[in-house]
Structure formats: structure tokens, C-alpha cells
Length: 435
Image (cartoon, rainbow, N blue to C red; front, side, top):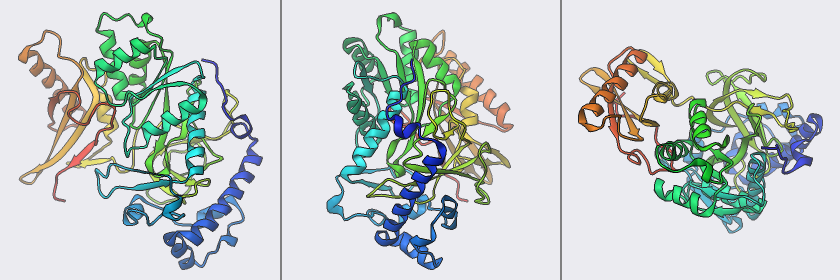
């Protein structure tokens, strides 16, 4: 696909000019936070800082980090920087790991958000000639609405298929001649594998590309999607706290996700010490929203592990790129003295026949000993069928994970959509231990 730049003046801005642009927006945002958000006003007064003290981008480091706990403590409207009468839409996180995080949008916020998502779609080659099928959920989760708005901004025809079952999704693709798929990578992989095992000829479809996000996914999953659907599959990145999708996205060169630096200032820090790391070193992504009216955030710790690259991309964009996110700081599991990330366990099972990429790790304690169970959604019955084949597949998976973790592991296969509705992300770790 030909790389297309939706907003050339901003996406290809020379770096020196971009940094001056960021500083001006940062100063305006800090002033509004100081005046209108009690949390930030209190933090700055406690540090004896005023908005006039921020004269360079490096001065941003004088502020402490904002964390998810701060947002939960402000539930529901404590972090809003405008009166509720100016808020045109409210989205929220699921709250599956605690109190939900509530995010508001003014009319301008919605307009800017739509433009940012349009950038990601355009980078994937989406035009007004395309039919975009979205299988993200539509609701308090912001993903479906964000991609819908962005596609309409470009002029594409939009099919809000949401979380319809997999055979309905394929039927819609066939009947309406879908050209672009948008949703979670795990669901896209299931669609790809279902089509590969059916009598449907992929050449009879009109597909050319896809944008997938809301959960970590590996290059192996990308390969399966691309080979079985004959498309280019690109990663998109966003998080509810920063407004949803549109924060960053890949172009066809697949050399990292372009961050919308005219809307966000990105830092990478050592997650243990908080030290800001230079470009090229891996750490935790920290984002500052510099163009939001209702819900600006300063130095928000995302929990996502990545690396920043500031050299320009071949596509012509000059904004920094972030490596794809596979791990989170809060995902690390410590069990029986072993530390491991869920993504590492996921990578062990991804190339096993019939085993999907959607899983959940359940930690428990029996007596004085920790236990681990990995629940995995099956994409199809094992070859040969029957209970014995299923038991052999489960034992093989259990042995593989046991060897990898060097401890006993229980594996339980579950039906698709058991861990979460198709199209929605799963809770990766459930820790039932008492400390």
C-alpha cells in the first residue's frame, strides 16, 4: 500500500519546529491544569511551581508522574478541566481491576481525536473508496467510536459490525465487500483461521488491509493474519486515559508506531527509578496530553514497555516512533521465585495447532504453595477430534508451559468468547492469592 500522509503540515514538521510547537501547547495546558484541575493545582503549589516556571520542554520533568491510582481517586469528574456542561461525550475504562477511569471530551476534543484516528487510517492506505468493517465493541469503551469517526472523516463507508459472531463477521465481509478490517488482533486471527479452514476463497474477498489494537500481539499473529487474509496488518495504539485510539499507529514500513507528537509529549523512563531514558533505550512510556480541553494529563505513566526512535521514517513522517508494545510493568507475574510476563507465556502457545492467542492466567494458593492455571480459548478442535485428542493437546500444551516456566502448570481449554466477548480484550492475569 502506498504510504499516505493525512495531515502533512503537522505530520512532517521539522523537529526543531515541532518541539517549539509542543512547548507552546504544553505551556497552555499547564496553565489550564493549574487553574482548573484541583489535583494539578495542589501538586504545583506544594512544589512551589507556577505555570511561568515552565519555559522549556525539559521543565516538564519538574512535575511528578500522574498514575492510574490518581485517576481512580478522582472518580468520576475530579480530573476534568472544564465544567460538565462543556463535555459532549464521556467514555470509561471497564474498571475490571478497580474503580473505572472516566474520560470526558469537549466538541474540540472530539474533532481532534477524529483527526488523529484519520491519520492512522490514512497511513494504512484507507481512502474514501474503502469499506471499513469495525469489530471493536461500541459502548463506554472508546475504541469502536474512535475508529468509526476517523473512517468517516476520511470518507470511507463504515460497517459497525461490533462484536457479532465470527460467521456473521465473515458474511458481512463477503456481502458488503469489506476492504479494511479494524478490531482486536486476536479476533482478526480467529477470522483468518476460520476462513483458511473453510471453502471460502480469500481471492473472492475484497480485503486489502487491517488495523488492529487494544491488546498486545506478536509478529506470529501478524503473519497468520496477513498470510490467511492476504492483507497488510498494522498496529494501532491508544489508551482510554489519553482518549482512546489515535495516540500512535504504524505505517506500511512497520518500523514502529508514529506518535502524534503535536498532541502528546512522549518520554520513556526507568520503571523502577523514574529516570528519563534517552531514545533507543527500553522503558515505560509516559505521555503528556498537550491538546486536550476536558481531560488533560501531565506525565501519565502508561505502564507500557517500549522504546522511542526519533529518526525520521522512510514514509516522510518526522514524529517519534515507539516500538510495538508486548509487555506492561504491571503484568509481571512472580510465582515460586520465577518472574515472567504474560506475553512470554502467550508466545509459547501461539504456534500450537488449534490453540488461540486469547488466554488468561489464574494464580492461586493451595496450602502454602502458589499454583498457576492457564486458560486458553481453542480456535478449533484438535486434529482427529474426540476427547482423547483434546486431552493429548491439553497435555502437550501443559508440558510445554511447564518446561518453559520450570514448574507445574495446569492448562484448561475453554470455548471461544469464554474469557471475554469476541472483539473485546481479556483480563490477562487473575491473582487470587492472599499476599
